[in-house]
Length: 226
Image 1 (tube, one colour):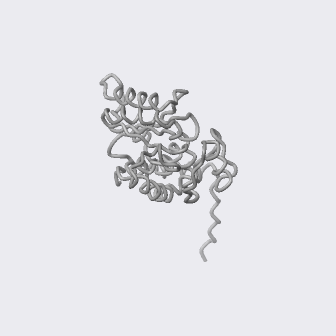
Image 2: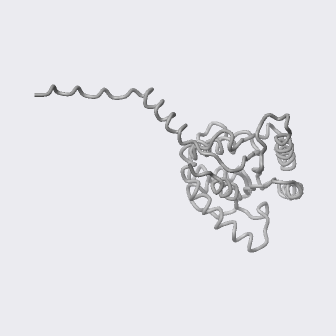
């Protein structure tokens, strides 16, 4: 008779974590173009896009996410995107050039968004992703479709906490679970935005709406298959 096999010792959490990290590293994907995302705020939007990068297993060189560092006016966000994109094109930069820069801006700035949009349109590879009233509306769309206007960003935030994420807070919130529904959010955002486009409305004039789906569609459509 053969000797009975010894039971396999279960892997420790540390080993499981290491194996998971190695597997994710092997599956890391690249985009055909290099993207720069400049966010109006320093908290919610940057944290969201970093979580999305992790979920999509995108490499650090595919997308660089940059917060505003207090320079949150729409024109300041666009100017920063232009400066960083131009800098990346310089041989002295030591980095791969950004071929596209997205500016993630809140629509509650109203006419100031139009000014920033005009500057972006005159620049090569600079695009705007406006959410009205604010980025929290984009987050809300991950949980449900909601076409009810709000009077301010504070009201949008209250709606988000009431209808989807009661524990949401700026800065300290983890989006790792939220980003799993990015496709549903994009579909809802696109459906709602199309109604405004048919009326000839800019995103900052359509309450509520979010153009972040445009950014998502472009990046996801640009991922190289491995």
